[in-house]
Image 1 (spheres, rainbow, N blue to C red):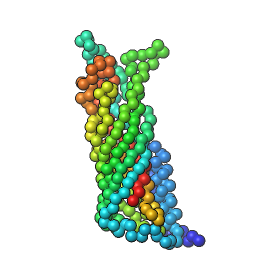
Image 2 (cartoon, rainbow, N blue to C red):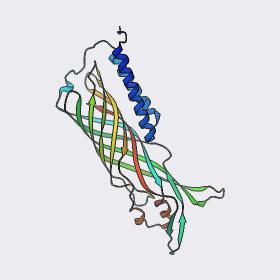
Image 3 (spheres, helix red, strand yellow):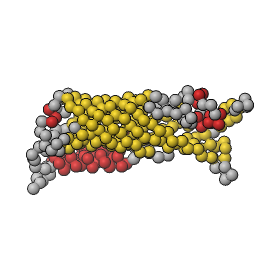
Image 4 (cartoon, rainbow, N blue to C red):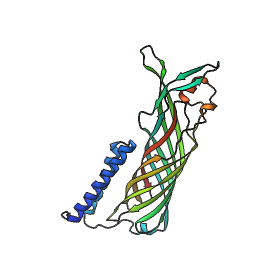
Length: 280
């Protein structure tokens, strides 16, 4: 039988509603969908319900006392690419004649991918931990170019598409702040940085990204203590801190017809929303 809610529980609920509101503002600024916010709300409100329950027998009661431990991580993510269009560009064709080109490019949807990795976590205190997780991210971004110089018979810009494949190898460096464990649940927040290397680049693509990038990340999760292992679902927002566009790629293209598309942008930033499952 559950105990009636106390004033402490209502205050805790108000704090979590405030946290959800802050994440919603973050999502609006970075273009993240509201589905992520809803998942955060579900995790937090589930923890509120857990905090109102009677004490139960704890699974693996000493697992958080380990100084250092390993685990594995699998998950899925959504990728997006912020592109800044440069507008009209003056180019030179193969005959030496100059002409003006206007091409815009955009990734009009969040494209899915997946990630796998391993982790090592160092216990700093009863609430703080340092986590390192070498991870590989696999995905493809679908880009659409609109050539406003070359129009169709209907008077609309012609479209050209590119599948920009990406394989990132990175090392996640996070600081984890966890609440006090109650029964077999323990919510937490996490923030950190993720330097990555881009292993996929093709010389015949219209656009190409740099070999390296770095992401800032913030997220929430909850530890679930099961009889044989600890499961940790986590939702994280990652935002690229550098201009990931390879500015020298256009000068290396051999086909002059590709230049209007290669010079359509000069600045890109990568974004990802990751749902990960840690097994420890």
